[in-house]
Length: 203
Image (cartoon, rainbow, N blue to C red; front, side, top):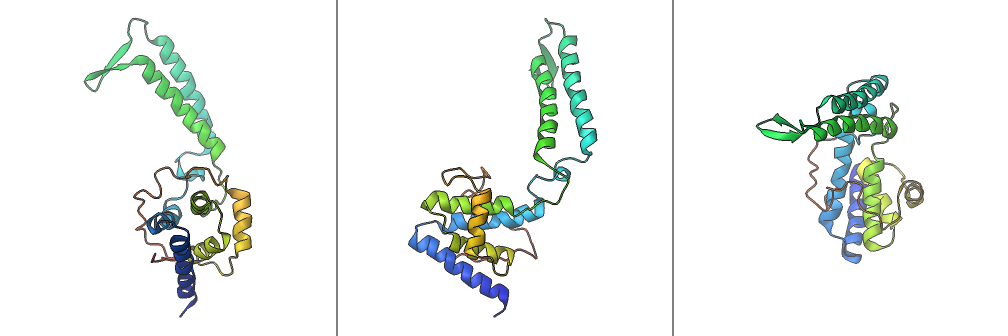
């Protein structure tokens, strides 16, 4: 039995403990495990290049221009021309101006939320899995989670103490909601082929 098989065996035991002894739904855990390959493949949106094809300086200029254009358009529209005919139905002229302004907000918000440096794609799925267990059971169960995370990421010697430190540093209070609103236990799909992510069958 090679190392990866041993990882999977230990992780299955950890999942069994969480489901059989603490009442967690195996499908909910499976859904959160499947978030890992999704984030590895698609990214988490914290890198600038994951959101836009222009550089940050161009984005700043574009945001400024959009904001000015929205105000210029708002001033240019005659008060009596309250609706613009588009796509066969009337659209509020104010709505169009507001959308242009919101595009500037999107750019400016992304400038604050992202960077150009290397990003740890594992942070969000690890937080989601950690907080789900913490939130649902009421206790963090660092040992079981360290074994599951070690199997998913094929990490050698990832301990419960390292998981505790991760939880203390990155995770919110146990009562917080999921990081990914449409995630687990909804119908998250994890069918992306990934060499570096260890598939863990849930018993």
